[in-house]
Each structure stands twice: as C-alpha cells, then as structure tokens.
Image 1 (cartoon, rainbow, N blue to C red):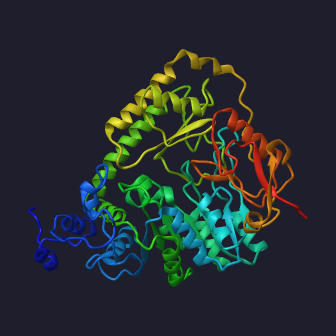
Image 2 (image 1 turned 135 degrees about the horizontal axis):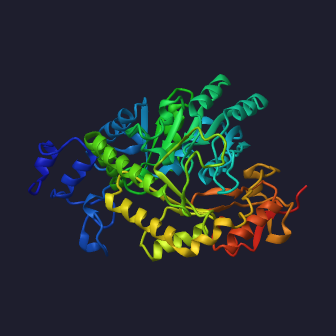
Image 3 (image 1 turned 120 degrees about the horizontal axis):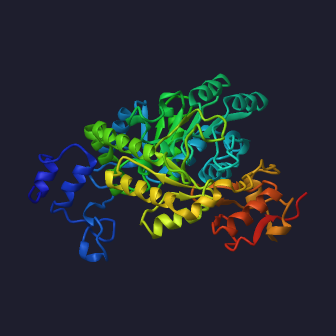
Length: 493
C-alpha cells in the first residue's frame, strides 16, 4: 500500500475496520502530530527501534477507552463475542488493574470478601485499597512439590454460611501451576448465598479456543472473569481483558474503577495488540490451536518417559481437589533427581538456552502457548531427556525424601489496611515470631504472598524464608531486601 494522504484517511477508503489496521494506515499518512506523545512519531527522535509511528493519543477517529463509542467499542465487543460473554473490557494495566476494578466494584468499601489464600498480590492490594475485611480459604497443598491444589466448594459454602456479611467470592483458577477448581459448583454456591463469584483466570485466556483445555470460568457461571491475554495468547505484555458475565456486579461501578486503576492515556499499541490478537484468533485460531495442542501432547508424552526429571500430572500430584488441569503448564519435578528446581533452571538456561517461566524448590515450570514452535518443543524435550540420562542423577533412586514443604495457615490479627497503615518498626527475622507483619513477603513469580500485613509471623514462615534464601531464591516484598528484618506493627495491643 502506498502513502495514504489526509483525504484518503478521512474518507476511510483504504481502512479496514480494525484498530490495528487503522493504526498501521495512520502511521503512513501525512498527518503531522501537534499533540502528545513527545516523540511526535519521529523515529529519529528516539534511541532504538520502536514503533513510534503507531504510538498516538486520543485523536479524532481513534475513540477513547474510558468513553468508548466507536472503534474501541467495537473492538471490545469483538472480545465479548469471541469469549461468548455479554460484555468485555480492555485492561491495559494487565490483570492486576482488572482485579483491582473487579474487587472494588463487587465489594463496598470496608466490606468483607472471601478469597482463596493463594491469590495473586493484586487481590491483596485491592483489599488494602478498599479497606476490606478478608476471610481466607486455603487450597489443598501437595507437600512434596509445594503446589497448591483446588478450592473446595464445600469450604466455600461453609465460610459463606458462617459469614453472612461476605459480599463476594474470589478464586484463582487455573493456578500458576495449572490447577483448575470446580468453578461451576462454586458459582452455584455463591449465587445461592446471593454473592458474585470473581475468577482470576489470568493464566487461562486460551481455554476458550480449544476443547483440549478446561472450560473457561466465563461459561461456568462466574460473574466476573479476568484474563491476561498476553500470558498465553499472541499479544503484547501488559494486556488483559475483563468479562462481565452477569448483573450481580454493577457495570457502572466496574467501568468507573477501570477508569481509576488504568492510565487516562492508555497505549494504542497495547490496545491494537489485543485487537490484532482477536482478529487472528477469529480467522486462524482453529488451525493454530490444532497445531499447538498436537505439538504440546507429543511433548508431554516424550517428557512423561523420563525417569528422574518427572513430568507432573494430576494423577501424580498429591493435591486433593484437582478438578481439572491445564496441560499447557509443563511442570518438571526434580524430587526424584539429585537436583533442585533452581539447579535445573540454571542448567536449562546456561547449557541449553531455554528460559523457563518459573523456578521453585522442587520443580520448574515451562509455560507453553499457542505461539510456541515445533522446534521449541523439540529443544525442551531434547534438553530434559539429556539431563535425565546423566549418571549424576541416579544416586537419588534410594535416597531419603526431602522434608515436606509446609506453609501452614497464617493467623489473622488485623486487617491488611490496619497493619499497613499502622506505625511499624524493624524486627530481626529470627526474633519476629509472634509479631504482626506490616508488609508482604512473596516469591515472584508467582506473586502469592507467604505472609500479608496483619498476619502473625509464625515459625513456619521464618523457617521457609530461611530455606528459600539458602537455595538462592529471592524473597520479594520485604522492604529490607536482605530479608534479615521484617517490618512489624509497633505497640501491638
């Protein structure tokens, strides 16, 4: 296509009615930008190769995300249609911003929420910002690997029956490791008690596009579902969508809080990335996912033959409540080898140039997605098979098993907002048992807090922090980056 003139652009003769196509065409037009951003779409004004020609602001013809009436309205309607839901919204602040908005819209300020204790830190940030009282429901846990299982519907019902002030339920499904809860049953229970179910399905944006994967929470009765489209779909980092699936959560409130928790100048490059992703999936998704799932299944079969580096399956997992499992999460256990997860991660990176999604104490996680190639899967399988053959691993055949991983339930002493806003003091890690934490601590990824403000510091917590540090893991969230001290609430009553 040749250069587009201003007249051609305004008449729209050469434009396809998609945001990403319109941006491409506008970048080739002779419009001059006497508006933001400051690079003025001039590649000579920036250092590096960036798509500045498509980086615009809310100019005529490109709509406004926070008051969408035209092209962005249609783009979001395309998402809703593809996902089979009443309404969807872009989140250019990723799933984190969408979670903040969902919680804020569903629960009154100062209200009460029931949340799975293995939720992402964004959930706890929402609890803090809205000064909520949180009731935690703990998932089952695999003591060997340290993997969280699913959420028990029976426990959800028990907590709702005991706490009539709860205004919403929030769970993570799938988990970072691919464990899926019985969303349909949990939704049914939540609705029986008159409250909405919010599902952080950040890692399950791909569920909708292939029967090889579990059914999306949006089809199982959840009221609000959050997807990180950048995690498992061909989309740029920081892109997410939020689906409003019922009237149990106010549409007006959700839109209001999306406007609060996102920039007033959302990136058109990010928004056009979502639009292009949805367009490609609509046109080519069936074939893309057919190839992807065939390659993934072949890789899983190969990896399941290894003797020492073991592919984790729902059947082998000691978690209870594994209702379903996302097979795109390739968990490689080191429990039967001489390695730990960090050592396996280093070998894969240094020797084979394979970058894993996450390292844990007893496993590594390889995140597979529709953008993966046949070559990529083959490289992973070849590397794991080669490591598995090494003689140095074999002495673990009759070795004593490692001490089971136990995180334990934390005792809540005060609300997160009370603890974070209280006067605090630093306390040495080994002397803080029994004190109330004034800050978070977590491993990232996956960003699930080991402790949250307002919880009593336990011996288990201190022991686990020491254990992680000794193995070279970085405990984040603590303001003392050496992890030698913890901020605790001063003058506790």
